[in-house]
Image (cartoon, rainbow, N blue to C red; front, side, top):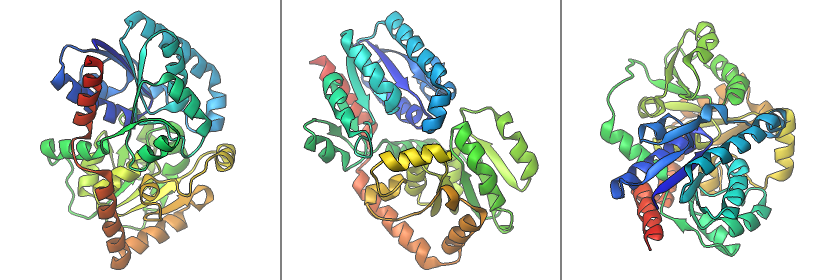
Amino acid sequence: MKKVFILVGEASGDLHASNLIKEAKAIDPTISWQGWGGDMMSKQGVEVKKHIRDLSFMGFLEVLLNIRTILNNFKLCKQHIEAFNPDVLLLVDYPGFNLRMAKWAKERGISVVYYISPQIWAWKASRIKIIKETVDRMYCILPFEKEYYQSQGLSVSYFGHPLIDAKRNYESHKSEKISTTKPVIAVLPGSREQEIIRKLDIMLSSMVNYDDFQIVVACAPNLPTSFYDKYRSQYSFAEFVSGQTYDILSIADFAVVTSGTATLETAIFKVPQVVCYKSSYLSYRIAKWLVNIKFISLVNLIMDKEIVVELIQKEVSIKNIQKELDALIFDNSNRDRMLYDYNKMLKLLGEEGCSEKIAQDLIGYYSK
């Protein structure tokens, strides 16, 4: 394995991919890396051919509205891979795009590895067929996924969750970058433009009466700081911090979080949270029809019960956010119960060293 092309479509994938690449380089520094991704991958020496800021489309309707751009991205990605001529195509999450690229790469004799396995247990179980046909090695990061895939006749590997390593890496290098004399409510509105536009006004409007707290908004590093200018001018009581989500979570006392990887990150930092999810009406109705899961947040999915309150669609309102946040701030029993369940969840996620173990397994597999 001398050349690896890595495909990432979102900020969370950029984080996990960068940690995996770091560990792989420590084992074999001769591997050449190229791909699609973000700033964190770039810092690890990956030649990033297309940035994730141009790739994130949220929801079924948004995908349809941007179908021409997406089709052009498939064409461009194939050109980049052919020009690089890699030994391995390493796919990270982003299944709608990546599984199509897996099929194309396999037909051309390129070995395919999938890191952060597609969540076919939630929807599109039929994708198991293309995974079996195209993926040579797959790594899942949720404890129940290995058993699920094995029940479908597919062998996968589970070495724990990479966010445990991400937090460890952060704590070994952190410095006090954010200071405040007040307790902190963190607002994590997501990394995609569409989801931020849909929710951030509501999230911040719900914060206007919390004068005893410092409100800190985690701005997505993949978006220009100017994107948040209108929110800064309208909500002057809030502090907007870009690319420092872990710095924010490390000092946060409570959080209001967009559903996604951030809910699990917030739990790993042991911050009591309220989860929000709001997409377009059509996208939500289609998802409701197709997706077969009881919960939307990773914390609740892993524990298979409601640990954190989920506000979905119309439930994402100023009144409801304040109600659920107050239940955490003013009722110690609610807060203590959530923190107790966080600790149980952390035990399920496993020990540190996930990224290192996957890197060792991956390089060992191709060294045989």
